[in-house]
Image 1 (tube, one colour):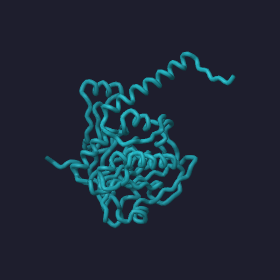
Image 2 (cartoon, one colour):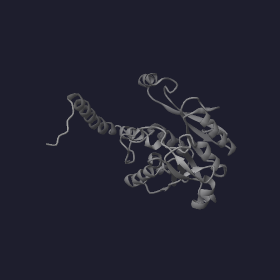
Image 3 (cartoon, one colour):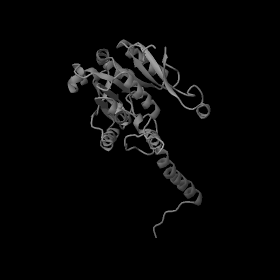
Image 4 (cartoon, one colour):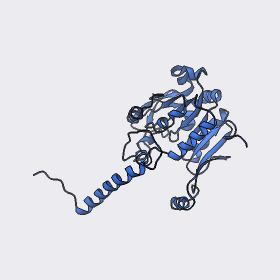
Length: 291
């Protein structure tokens, strides 16, 4: 007789996880704002966050929406560089006339396209290439186990080779209305796991022409400083950090502060790249007009 078996302890733990997930996740969705339907990798860091919160970085995205409204960016284009599975593209598409996304990792790009269908998002175009300072075929590696969307060209290592294209020249060839100024870029999100400086070097002309708001992630201060240097070369002069309650302490202290004080997310102007991991906003002039 064919049979599979689990010990009582193993069965109890696995069954408890299963029942808790089925009980907690649907209940939590009732208390969350509406979010696009997204297919995820359920064991992936991003996927787990979306399952629990509806979308990834939900609070930061809501803060950005408010910023877009104050700047009247609804008729502009959003460039999503490092589109991953489409979390930001699908969540922010309604704030812009169109979204142009870039995701070179084939399985992740496939999920991105699936999520456009699931969410009914019709104003997004996906280019399955990476952007960089020159045209090249580069090795691509997954940087973090359990995070399938964390792949990058930055290490110069990896089992697969994917296309990277010089940003300004690629847009001139494939998105001429952006290149000739007929359609203005209002916002750029770049999350490419340490490859940001190369991306920005290739888009220097586009940034100088369109002067968009730009967010990027700094996981390591040296990488963040290189990226900020490229942005300053394109004319950016103001850097802000997305702050959260308790983000200057350890994780237990952070959660304790939020339980006691509540939660806030805000943008704070800074003079240099912080030592800690953070999401940054670059702008031409102050992020918010003086009162």
